Length: 526
Image (cartoon, rainbow, N blue to C red):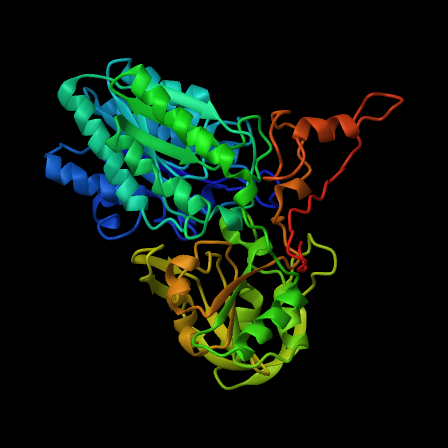
């Protein structure tokens, strides 16, 4: 049993190196051998669910390596080769084997290869041979290659976003592996590609139409498929395999084909139903104030989606913070702003001190310098957080020296290390009670919904400047499939590439980006 997880944003500013996998960034940090067993005893990850099933089945488990890093640019060649080699050599040393379980993501791109999971599976298959079954648990954002599907014997994908079913998905994959080991049979496979990308915030299974698409998957298994998965794809990945896929397994080819065809048809039919209402930073606060004036309970929560560290953001941009200050927001909080220097200065000054701070800022974005303001050091923390909400599921986070800085009526949660704001404890650890705020701004696109939706008066998606564009149409793709549509109602990639040809040379314009507006509601949109 082994795991190797990374969601790669090929447009992000920083790669995933060995240090990123050692840190984990919200995942369990790089762990080897028997240390894997206690590390996954009570967290929401695929390996956890698989290990619980393994105990029930009475497997003799050989844990090899588990490594995961927060989404970013490419996995470095050094990191990929070291981790993949440890996994493959560990599996080879454990032979003879009855089966292999892999906890993967599905959207890993390394500096030297496009299909991280496919390459890892190929190497594992080479050492175990054709007769040992391989099962994989995968994220629903996987950009799945057909080669990967042909190399493994069965896979299962998440069915929730926020991903509250990561452990449950690992359990399903383990059950499928156990069935193969017991029966010595292999299921038939069906693989389908679909035609359009969906912006990350509106892939959420808490809202339509994704809620209905994923809600129907279990029925396909009742109707004859052994496993049915819909992968929405991670859209910030400039590779030919980027995009949605439907994958099914069955005792017969006909059963697998029926399920895959039905999943693909339902996805295609949902194209016009995807909601895309978003706000710029200032308009989001105007709308938040309007909603607050209507009455009700709980905070209005604003997702700062273009700086979501779960998709390659840096969790440090200042557009929403500037808007909060300019709007004289009161009883508001924003987090996480990753700024080790500001956090260190707060600890040097001590709780209760007031001083001039420079907070956040992303040098790769125009006009996103640090916010300079007088701030009160309201609370300090060593950054150790037990994230108890449904997404993190009990994971221990080490956010490093941290502080709550108050600028007027705005509380800013400043940390030294990065993790997606997807748990209320990530406010509470510096004294901010999220339920008592009027406005909460979270550096997240969707995962925050798992723990914050139950207290929210309303949820808004804001497009303050950030390194992860809301719409895939705004990314400078060069390598996608020509027939892939860049948003549900947007242009085909192939058509845009044809438009970009220089009439005199037939070449492409450098740095061309395309904006596609899907919003039909007359509200500010990014």
